[in-house]
Image (cartoon, rainbow, N blue to C red; front, side, top):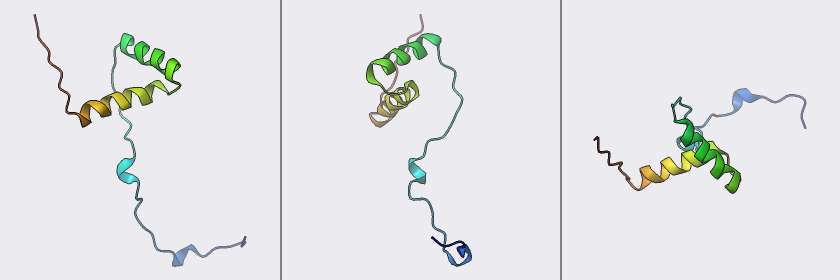
Length: 71
């Protein structure tokens, strides 16, 4: 391997995976919801944040809408 490289001659290019990157946000969830996904996490071996993301991604992909009735 060389001791020095000349990066001034290199051309830059956009990250082809940039659209697939995740964005960090802050969200408030009920303790029961977090506990539920943490239990699923232990069964599946996936981190609970990934499970929440997968569930929300499925909802968005399938255009699931929550029906709420206030009593």
